[in-house]
Image (tube, rainbow over all chains, first blue to last red; front, side):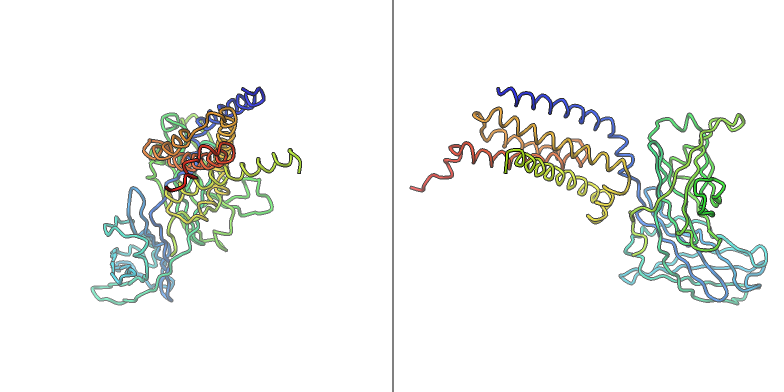
Length: 288
Length: 140
């Protein structure tokens, strides 16, 4: 055998051995960061007329739930909603095959001009993104057993941006945001047994309000907060929805999360770190 | 053009071919997983996060080394080369799809085997044309 060829062969095999062992070592980390959970669909609707504003009416489906609702209803006109009113909200969804689905929710107003947030309800229609073709919302108010308001409000499908952030061991993904709305994300970790070491945790969502000092944590404003058991967080049970009511669009802000893993709250035995969020490529049908 | 220039061109060509194989494997795998377009899959490889990109580079180096080792092996056993290694590699690229490994490696091994087979057949055609005598047989 030619000595030069033999030398090349041994050298290549040695480097190959190192590359393969690195591939084995990095495999779990690669799978964790590359193949992420994705929602089947996620929609957020907004509509308004001169009397009422409905924001954040969402439809979503993931590997655990298919749900709708959670919208915030804000009376724009003074005394539009009075104590004791019975309100019926019916979201009308028409598919591209002209099938119509109705999603009705009812509630009573407890104080005058109440800002009401609809409940989140399980959806059994088994929809797909093809079913979201046209949409409107029928708003009915019953006062003293008489229907005093019955209007159809056109709803617009909000352009959603998906945010995520990660470091070597932790990711926060599937954060959906519109200019005025944000749905908190899913937390995951490569560290096994993290829920035993840190039984509780919290995630604060912050946006940068003072762009001149992005490195100073005091330049950030906290606008969402999720706290609970680490296991529930890892299982994706603690997602919540928040609204951004300040000036401008939330999508123009720099976002970050402060993650606090809590071993013992009384002894202040916690581990805190920051994860910067970035806009990611669209992984689901959010706005076809 | 001197010998060094040739070697540089060959290395660049091999690097490019193995890069394409790694990229195709990642793109197919990500398209399957996310049900997305190829452009989005390419974005996910290069700009989505650093961990995917680093693993992609690792797979590319792996492909390049395997291809180089196949070339060296061919040079060492040039006199004894037959179609058997090619048939083995084609068999491997079929069998790999029935093995419980991640689809990235299934695509990668399949494409890489095909590249090595193509290169091997080309070299055999050039260096040992007698292996192809059955192609040149005239009809009675």
